[in-house]
Length: 503
Image (spheres, helix red, strand yellow):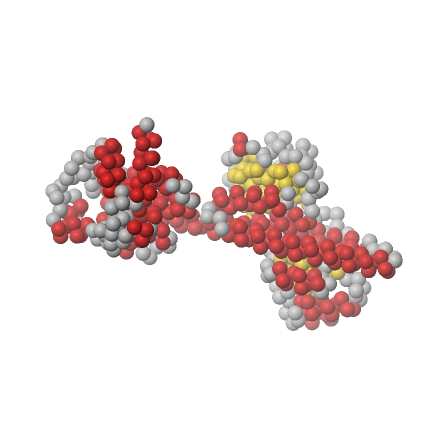
C-alpha cells in the first residue's frame, strides 16, 4: 500500500503558538486527526506562558510572527522551565541567518512556510525519537546532544543553501517548459536520483500527462502515465500529500518503469494540485526528511513561477493576437504584401538560429518581427498602394512608419529588444537609414537581422511598382549592401543560410 509520510507517528502533547487563526486551525486539525497528537493551540505569547507548565508538553511549535514576544525569546523562556521539551520554529522568512541563529539557540528544527504538513509530521517523529531514546548516562546524553546539535545545524544550513540555489535558478527560467526542465535538473542534482518525472493533471480526463522526464525514456513524453486516485502518482494527485511506494507493488503496471523506492510529491498552484513530481532510483540510501524538504521547497517555488509564466504567456498570446489582427487588416489591403510579415519573421528566426542566439532573443524575433511594419497602418492607402514611384513628400511619409509603429506598441508590456525591431529595422550600417540615423552596432542586433530579412522578402515579392526578382538576384544585392546598408556579419550568416537551402 502507499504510505503517507505522516502515518505511524508517536503520539505527542503539542503546544502550537501561531497568530494566524486559519493556519493555526488547519495545523491543529491535521496534527490531531491525521497524526493522533494532543494539540493545544494558542494565538500569542501571553496565553502560551499561561497554559504552560513543566512536563505538560513534549514539543512547542512557535511561529516567528507570534504576537506579544519574539519567537526566540519565548522559546528560551519555555526551555528554561522544561529542558526536555522540543522547540520547532516556523516562519515565512527564507533567511539562512535566521535559521542558523534559531538552531544555535537550541531550537530543534526550523520550517519555512509554506510547508507540507507531512513535513512537520516527519520532523515531530524525529523529535520524538531524539527526545525519548536518550540513554540514562548523563555524559553520553550530553555528548549525543552536542553531536545532534551539530548535525542539525549543518543540515539546516545545507537546506537553506539549497533553498537559495533553487530559488535563484527557478526565477531565471524564461518559460514554463524551461521551469519543468529546471525542476528535473535540480531534483536529480540535489536529491541524487537517477530518475525524475513531471506529470500534469488533466482535470477533465483525470489523466496525468508526462511533460518532462529524466531517466525514464522520451517515448513516454506527452503520454498519460497515471490516472487520478490510482497508483502512487494518482493518489498523490488526489490527496495532495507526498507518498512513498515500491515499484511493481504499489504502482500500476502501466506506470513509468521506476527503479527502487519512489517518492511522489504534489505540485500545487494556490493550494490546488496541478501535477506530480516523481523521483526514483536513489543513488545512496533511502529518501529522507531532508529530501522531502528539498523537493517540497523546489515545487512550492516552481508552482509560483509556473503560475506567473502561464499568466504572462496567456496575456502575451492575447496581445499578439490583437496586434496580428491589425497586421492582417493592413496586409489585406495589398495583395502584393500579403503574408510579408510572416515571411520576414520566418527568415529572421532562421538567421538568428544560424547565429546561435539564445531562446529569449528568438522569442523576441518571433513576436516583434511579425509587427515590424505595424506602423504602416497609419500611412494613407493612396501612398501605400501607389503603383508609380513615390514623390519626396510621399517617401517622407512612408519613412514615418517605424515611429508610428513604436507609438502603437509604446504602452504595451514588451521588451526593449522587441521595441527596437519595430523602431530601427530601417536603420543602415553606414548611418544613412531612418528614423534616427543610427550607425553600425548602435543599431540593436535583432533590428539588423530583420533589416536583412525584410530586404530579401521585398526583392523576391511582387510590388505595385515592379515584379519580383529571383533568390539569386536578391542574394547578390544583399551581398553588395554588406558594410553599407547591412551588418556584414548578419549578411554572412544569411548567405550561408540561403546557399544551404538552395543546394
